[in-house]
Figure 1: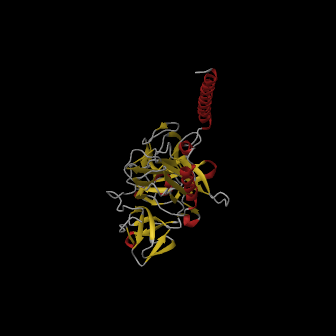
Figure 2: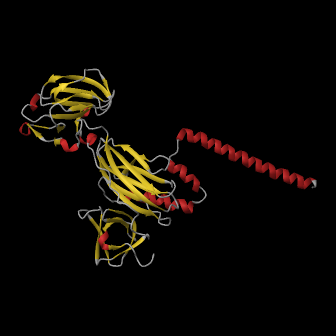
Figure 3: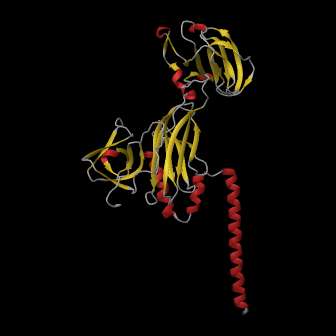
Length: 390
């Protein structure tokens, strides 16, 4: 090798070494930045497509557009479907959540841990920003759990990763923040609710009444400290439980007897007293008046904090469709905003019209029109098995 060639080779090796050093430095700098900024799972996922915007941009735009979807559901909700690779479909649902509930969103697939992103937004009255981000699933694993801090309309957005093709099962449901306060009873034992008239309409009920046999144990629905006990006023024999230093105060009233002392630390399930009808409940059947008081706001509706809801029922087997496209078999088919005949009509399809199917919930198909709008159509009005895949 002559001197010129040798010099050229050394320059090439030097340039490669410089690039490797720069790349290593960039990776280290990114690690340092990540430890401070803590990028979201979606942002980390996006890095895989930094050099392929043709794949990532349509995926990201589909997510942004899903904020404009107006599908409405009620909990509990279950849906089966297939994520099709080419569709880039995003699943978006509006639902009412109440303070005291804990929202659960789960997506199960028949593939080995494909990336599934779940985000939760709260609807606002701001015309410039209709939704504000509230929570997300961790690590793109298709599972979200969120305690609801404000009663409002929320939007759940479910998006599979790029190129994902798999059968899926979606479950949306809520559980209470607290356990139920009467041993052996559930929501069915509540016979008087928040806001009911009292004293001929001069005041309203500031809690719920849970009926049970005299002497039935009432228990701590959360861990905390007994802040007060005694017999006084309308509540008769009563126990006050402070859930934490700055938390809610829980009110147990009309007890037949009190089994804890002020200052005692209790755990979930510890017995506080026994059902009775003391105070102004002497003329009624034995029951527990249970209330929640929150700082300066005073009494709040305790029902969402203790209501035991059912989980969604998922039918056995796979979904009963094979292709992403279906056809309308009826002369007319109403497209509805919710999977119910009471759901608002948002459009209409005619016989042989083509629709994209996203999933099935009970007797309804979750669909997308050719214009991209989302809706529900009754299964009796469509053909899930077209002669060929359009």
